[in-house]
Length: 526
Ligand code: G4P
Image (cartoon, rainbow, N blue to C red; front, side, top):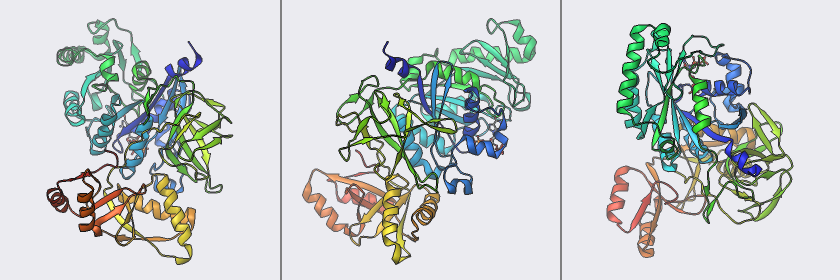
């Protein structure tokens, strides 16, 4: 087999998603631990490790203790090369997470056993469903009191709208938690509440082995057999293809903090999770094993080091071999570019790399050439399809408060929008600029970064809007009429597309009724 096929087959590029506090950071650290990428077991309590294992490049993130940025952690595990794409923990940065999900081949969802499916998880799952991304679910914090595992399975199925299949099963929960039976491998792992030590495995032949009774006691062994029988009766046999087709999500139980159930999750994950898949471009579908390099920018991280004002574009390699110093075409500008210092991310370290393969993420130092969604290729004119923009939830006018710095403000706004920090709309009636975000915190980040990175000061003015709707019509006259009638509420997005800013749901409903020839969309691609 050609080297490229070997390299593709051993790559697993994925993201861990969860509602804040379910244990994403802890699980990420434990995975890094197994990959030898960090060496301090169970140091999650220490905020220092917490911060360095994830990304804390941005000043604001340090200040707020929220993982604003999306970083990449690569490590080897056995024959596999694993790339974890970290996503911001805070829901105000959901848009960032949506984009990261365009660059992964699968996802692990972490759910807190006491809290079940929470709002942010539901939202992110919708994006996975749109893209048919295979998911594995890790039910966390079994060392704490929580809900009945059968209840949790039902909730996962109904709330996440995906079939589930437990591949491990807990023996009790909370103070009485004794361990998990690994259905995938037919083994028993006993729980020792110890963050330094990996669980103790009991050698057994099958679920009827008396060694289970010896290990957990007769009553719990009987209950386990009963539960497993029920599982076998209720849930169909696990079929990897159903998982790969995003129809079934395998479920594991454990405690990330206690490093319990994590290795079992990882071992199963590397076996069943998909290697990089063909990727759809506007022109055609591109296979990863094609010789010509291609990739797209899914994240731009500006000024990671405030002293150097550097900016890094994160490129997901989709096909071929990426090589340092090779000339690649930046499709949007048509320019050929060479990258002398591309970096790969191995745990906390950034290293210059000479090559990268499909599934890998390459960081390219940039001085403002890249925008989110840009395609790079060995020469062919193809455009990868990104995720569309979604209608923001919050809107504010942005105003300049320092007339001497209007150029800086303009530049700052443009660059932050290129990075995908928020969306910019320009009112067609009065020319005022409106910033749309998913949450309040994004406004604070923008204001902070404009000041600290561009020396520009802004202030926000309220505007009461419900949704931004991208509009279209097959009838140009109807469109012109609508725009005339609604001219005060018409805006233009950065691509020059017409956007109707509806100030209430009622107004939107009325507009739909009054203008049947106009189609209203909550996303920019339809
Ligand atoms: P997140 O990234 O999803 O937001 O969650 P994170 O890993 O930061 O975990 C949130 C809290 O839950 C942390 O406690 C963490 O220690 C705890 N936690 C994670 N996994 C488990 C588990 O298996 N069992 C128990 N009992 N707790 C778990 P914290 O007090 O908020 O933070 P810290 O001071 O421990 O860092």
